[in-house]
Image 1: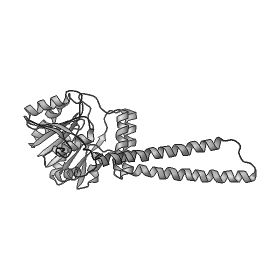
Image 2 (image 1 turned 180 degrees about the horizontal axis):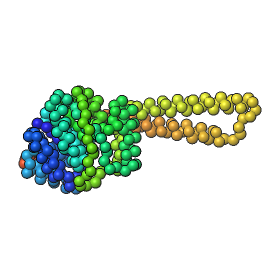
Image 3 (image 1 turned 30 degrees about the vertical axis):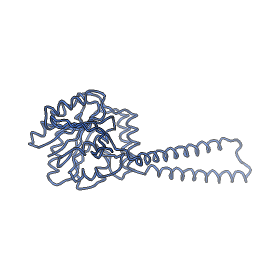
Image 4 (image 1 turned 90 degrees about the vertical axis):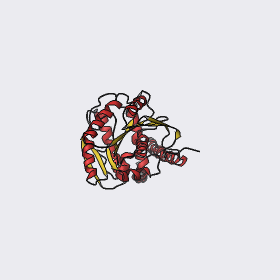
Length: 321
């Protein structure tokens, strides 16, 4: 059986479409499947649509968060609830084409354990968004030493790889990179990002920036090395300017005024403040990990026609004392 994980946030218009299209595609291949929708604290009728589908379709599983915990948490929750021999993660807005799942399944049947969906094209995006996404993935590729230039959350993994990811203790997990980090026998399938049939994107410039910073710092310590690099650049500039100043002083042509001093103070002060801010962000990440709070809290799970209320369920599926 294959489990399809579908993180859902304010996607009431796309739930029924996703069930119909993905189900039709897999039934045509005579595949046993389940659709695991994870409602990530939606403010619209997303959960009500998931409940309705679970009542009329035995293939649908609904997981309802107690509040919004983010897409990464929704993916992890879906993987934890999935029962399939392999699991696929895709967007319920159908920008990830269901037909590509069939290619992934065939590759899995051939023995591949991680099948990555890589973007052949990004669809209709603004120039600013395309530039920002390209910059983010270049930074991530350099920081993680993994080529993420065309990476996406659309992928299929064998149960072995899923269990490996779920066993990782970190709370701020970056699924897109972790699926490559765990290794196993890997291949890729190209796909074209589809246009949304309904609804609008939930990603703004602010949320994308926050997402980028959080995932870079959670997966790599490379940004900390920037402090050393900046320190080396400032030291080199200081040596050059120090030698220049001494030469002018002894030759009697020293420059009067405080312009150079002010510029140096501003430069060094800026580097110090940025460095402290970066260190502070990593300390905040450490603080959050040490608190050991669960990745998410589940208020209810529904499978088929039977609902299973689980008040206060944490990310391990257990109940707090």
